[in-house]
Length: 226
Image 1 (cartoon, rainbow, N blue to C red):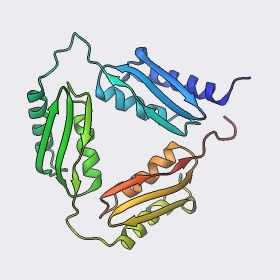
Image 2 (cartoon, rainbow, N blue to C red):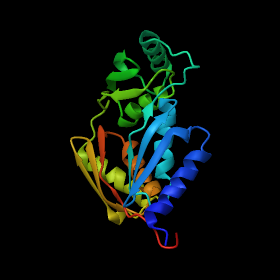
Image 3 (cartoon, rainbow, N blue to C red):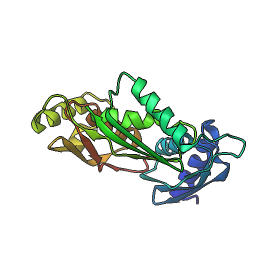
């Protein structure tokens, strides 16, 4: 009889092969009790991020460990670290939604370190998303600080997140615990799948006053009728 982990592995392998953003020819997939580990090499940091997203969409997955390395093909001209830094700086400076202050960018052998200040937590993650497809990038350390423009008390933040969860069809708000301390949100509880987990995270991510989100939500795993 085919085990649950074997079914998950089959679906992950097929999904990665389907996604045109991901060259999965050098990717190895291992599954242990619903936890998927990706190892091997992909041709860009964007491809690495896409592979991580793909695994989250698979039914039965409870956790994802992304150990993929980035190795750009020899046929591609890789920008120098200085060129990568300048390209990133121009891209972030030109984006009207981020308004990154005190921008500090370091690039060493394609490894990018971001520092500076943004006004919302979602802007911190958005800045990283903007540069993940930049040629030559192999890793990103995001040290952007979140400093909200207006003070919001923790109780109001928690209330706004819970109200958002209650409005979502794919989330049972009663199974999610929201704790806020000095703007840092901690999410605990259990959700039915990764789609619901991502939906809860987004409720916290886009709430005013949030400076960080610690997503400790557990995924229930396989659902009946797989």
